[in-house]
Amino acid sequence: MIPLPLARIAEITSGALTGMADPRAVVRGPVVIDSRAVEPGSLFVAIKGARVDGHDYAAQAIRAGAVAVLATRPVEGPAVIVPDAAAALAELATAQAAALSKVTVIGVTGSAGKTSTKDLLARLTARVGPTIAPVGSFNNELGHPLTVLRADLDTRFMVLELAARNIGHIKALTRIAPPQIGVVLNVGTAHLGVFGGKEAIAKAKGELVEALPRTGVAVLNADDPLVRAMASRTDARVTFFGRGESASIRAEGVTVDARGRASFTLRTPSGSAPVSLQLYGEHAVDNALAAAAAGYELGLPVATIAAELSQATPLSRWRMEVTDRADGVTVVNDAYNANPDSMRAAFAAFEVLGRGRRRFAVIAALRELGEEGPALNAELGRLAGGSGLAGLIVAGPDAGPVLEGARSAAAEAQAAAQAALDAQAAAQAAAGVPQAPVPHQDAPQGWHGPSPDQGWRGPAQDQGWHGPAQDQGWHGPSPEQGTPQPGWQAPGAGGVPPQGWQAPPAGGPVPGAPPGAGAAYPAQAMRIVHVPDAEAAAAELAGWLRPGDAVLVKGPRAMGLERTAELVLGGAAQ
Ligand SMILES: Nc1ncnc2c1ncn2[C@@H]1O[C@H](COP(=O)(O)OP(=O)(O)OP(=O)(O)O)[C@@H](O)[C@H]1O
Ligand SMILES: [Mg+2]
Image 1 (tube, helix red, strand yellow):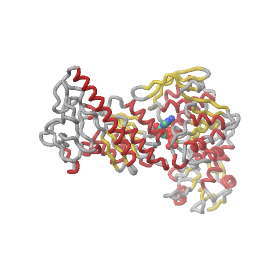
Image 2 (cartoon, protein in one colour):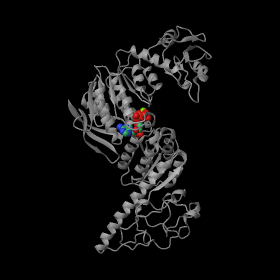
Image 3 (cartoon, protein in one colour):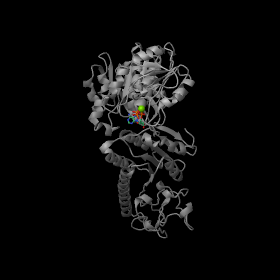
Image 4 (cartoon, helix red, strand yellow):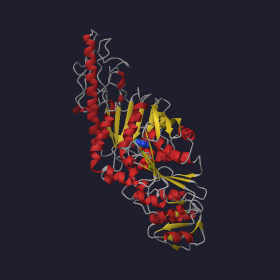
């Protein structure tokens, strides 16, 4: 930050010095709200939260070297007393930003991808000059001014993430550090409940481009109609990015490798260059294009933009983090947060990455979706249930709609697959090929399962017991999928298969099937299990996973499902 004496801080915030604060004592930063982050020269801002009151940590902050505390009541030690600490923080940041005349401020907003795009763009601006960007997702009324206050006289760029939880929020953030470039990624369904509709979300996000001066640039996603329409809400010049011809900064010939990483040709009005992203998921293309468009407007050469984008690796944690375990199990940790759009993006990426492998997913019900919550969660369940997984774990509360959607989509997918197998078998029979018995009509002999009301438990619940792979042409019925078919025997309790039980040979036919028959295996069933939390999800998965499998872990922030991924990867924080 630009150093400020306490007297000046009191003046900017209309505050009063107490606790023998020396008006000449200079705050050199950082300005922090977490007492553990205090350094000598800091200003500690005491925020009263729902659980913790920063005022209780004032003395500790002073001991750690804070010059003073910005507080709403006198504390032990020097303080600037203001009526509202968050408002005072914003006033301080506003005053500092106004003093930074050489800084270009770039704001990034959208429903999904702000942090990812901000990280890419900060990489590009850093090629031109010293850049300040928030760590992680500092994008609200506290994180935003704290980030702005990190800038100093050397700073040339501020790449800021602006989040809206309601109409007027982004407008307020743009007043702190008025942007010259505004990037709008997409209008999705995040926080739908608070806003009450996508149009209201578009109205809120558009406040970013409304704040741009005539000399500024609005960088808009041409592929999102609600973002495209924001062109009429700004005085600034408009640059479109996207996949189609109408976008001046666009991706052509997008291909995705076996791990789900995209390559494309970056086209701009002044040339093209090849980009090969190291970021996972095709949605990264849109974020890369948004960053490229802003970089282009800043005068960066296309080759430089393409090279930087190609070198970028995920900077902020738990967004499409892909890790391979020693045994070949691949874990996709996208657990930072989730909304309907990012869920779709994650499942699309996971389908590519997990192609040809047994795939499992751990998800949780989405939140903050208002009245549409149950319907959108049922839709999420259908997405998961219809995506060809071998197993799905739904963690946490309010899982009902997700489970219902998943079960119905999984049952439909299984029925469709069975119908296809039956048709294939019929065609082979007509051609004179010997047939395996079709299990739901002609169950294999010698398999006896107790009825479900006698405590039948399928493999999914039997930790430690490993049934044959579902993708090896044989499967046990899932406990969540209703009555076991006659002729199936669940493994014995305690994880040990009953005496005389024999796993069918891997890749082999249904027990009892005549040799040579291949087409009439039962279609795969998806295991669907509900668990209370991230730890239980990891415990359940441990019983399911085998070398070479792939797992997607994704849920809303409050579920903390990154813990599941960490436990699956070996227990340590990754
Ligand atoms: N363009 C995109 N479209 C859909 N999903 C995306 C996109 N970019 C990122 N995601 C996914 O959305 C989630 C959040 O990504 P990111 O943190 O970049 O977004 P954000 O807008 O900053 O989110 P938040 O509002 O929580 O700060 C991640 O799971 C990520 O994989
Ligand atoms: Mg973010």
